[in-house]
Length: 355
Image (cartoon, rainbow, N blue to C red; front, side, top):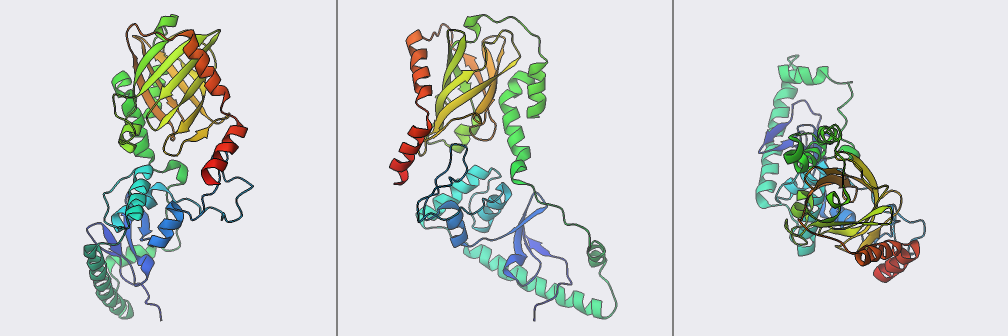
C-alpha cells in the first residue's frame, strides 16, 4: 500500500524528499521548478539518439527520415538539465547549452553516475521523511494539525505554479548576458531597455567609412559556451558595400557566415534588419532562410551593436579597426558564398553526414 503523505518535504544541501517514490527525491531550481533525477538511459535518449534525426533548415524534423530513425523525444526545459547536473554531482550551470554539454561529456566518457555522497543523502532524507511522516500521521489521526501542514493542506485544490516554458528558460540569465554586451554602451541591465536606449539615442548622419571595414566583436556567450572553438580576441565582422547593398562576413568562432542588410544605414542609433546564412561549426550544419534574422545598429565612433538568432538572440558589440578596408573582390566572394546556401546543398551535405 502506498504511503500517504502527511508531512511537509524535508531538505538538506539543496535536495528534497516528499515521499517514498523515485520522483519524490528532487532538487528545486529557482525555488519553484522541481525535478527528480532522470535515468542515464533517458539522458542518452535525449542527448545521444541512436539514429540522428534529420532536420529542416528551420530546425524541425524532416518528413522523410531514414527507415531506422525514430521520432525525436521532446527536449526538456533548461532548468531540467540544470537539475540533472546537481543530481549527478556535475558542475552546476543555469545555461541550458552548458548543462547539456556537461551531461553529454560525462556520457561520452562513461562517467555519468550518481556520486556516493548523493546516494547517502537520498537515503538519509528518505529516512527523515518517513519519521516526519509517521509523526504527522499520528497527529492527524489524533485530530491535531501541524501548523505548516495545515497551511499546506489549505492550499490543496489550488493550481500548482506552472514551471517556466521552454521559450522563457533561463530568461533572467539570458537577458542579463545579452544586456551585458551593451552595458558599456548604455549602462542598462535589461536587454530590452538597452535596445531602447540605443534606438532613442541622438541620430547623426553616417558616412560609408563609418560602417564598413573590419570590426572586432565582443560576444561573451560564444566565448563562454565554446571556449575550445574561439577566444575573445578572435571574433570579427567585416562589412562592405557592393552596389546599393551592405554585406557582411562574420566569424563568431562557433558560428560563421554571411550577412545581407535590408538597406544601407543612414544615421546612428538605428537598428537595420538583416538576414544571415551560415554554419554551426561543431558539425558544419548550414542554416539559411527567412527565419535567419538579425539587426545591427551603428553607433558614433565606428561602433556597432546587434543580434542574430543563431543561438537564441545572440548579442554582440563591435569596434571598428582604424584604416581597415574591404575590397570589391572580397564582397563578391561573400555574395557567391551566400548563393551556395541552397536546399540542394543542404540535402547533399545531410546525405554525406548521415548516409
